[in-house]
Image (cartoon, rainbow, N blue to C red; front, side, top):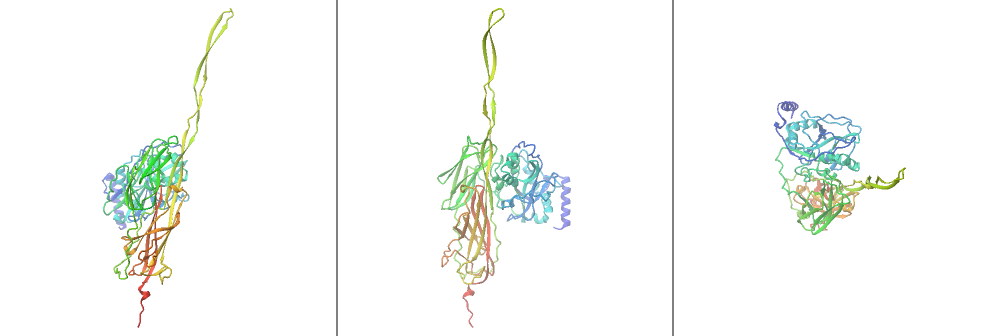
Length: 593
């Protein structure tokens, strides 16, 4: 799109805003966003939010991989001071990939004010006009606005190659300092503040900001939110599922997911794997140590009981069971019950699958694939860190004197000056009260986190006679050694380290056939390798590069998964390669004259 056309289009859009209501503009995008929330608290003189002081952070991302193709840009209707404390140009996808909060002290806050005002994003009542939000961000105007600020060609933006990743932003005062935060940043900051942000501004940070946007349908490897759209949300729920929306362009419209009955959810597990199944317990009323909650998971004939759960009024918490899946493929129904509060799911459908059922076929020396071209390397869902918290409570004594006044009457006789005797009485009151502890429960959180990192080393098998480092001939075997490091300070009952890795190969276009690796040593620091190849003469842990594979790079893609936390599964995408030059026939062919 040339500059003259962009300017002309921009002017036409600007004129259209002056002439028509916003709803009359054509939509060019497909919005994937919903919202919720609730009433606001009162805040304090040093920690408060003024309704209407909100905005969004928008990142242009690749429609297939979710990788950012522009820096995140903030938009706000109101004028914001450059002295705002903020965490730079970081979006939720960055944080999910392992980025940490980094307060910007040298860079003033940068943002843009739309020429046409955005609708309310963060509502003070939890009832923003979600239709207006969808219409605005899927409109031609929003696409032009983002294209200009992100320096991306407008036609290319709406052509289906990209999507908009949108996060609600709130501008508020906390402990007398002015901040700009997304829902994700507020949740992460609350962890650093040991729950102090929640205690002072939870109705904003853990409710109306986080519920201002969430996905209706799963997209870009991110989950749709199927929990309660009202009330305070846990940090882990915010980090995994809240504070985000997506606008897609071009192509076929998104197919709606299969409906799930309210109170139900579904999940995929692998056979014979340690997993953590979690639900969220929410409550409008305080759950305290005098009357704690109990949650029971009924799984495969066993009962897993979680006792002594405490949650402040309007709060929520993840509750989980760690268990081992069966050794055979099947679909299981898990049920969950609680003696108080509301569960995010009472029924969970668990599909147990066996990944070791589609290994590559026996390679033949006569195999051919003359038209082969190397396919693009895939990228599955990657989440390398997670965090969660557990509430606990401590009694805060507040001794108050309870007055209890008792009136006493005393009778007495007395004689006057004439010698006459009289009877009389008098009354007095005595406070016979008592001290009473009218204290309350103070709530705190124990915060936990886990991270997963890994490396894949693909190399020629030791039986390859002419290998030199990573250089080898086609037709021989390669090994894949994956080293996985699972780091956490949480108790073992909270987590399960990485257990599964699956490798995909270019000759099958990273599809059709794959090899399941097995853990050969370690747990938190684990090593995984190919299983023994039944087609190998020496039962090597090898995969044979087809003899027809052309000279060049042979890249193995591996997805490491099944590292479980209460906040979900961690996974990592891995690649490594060998270089192919010639074939095994060149080791056995002699040219005799």
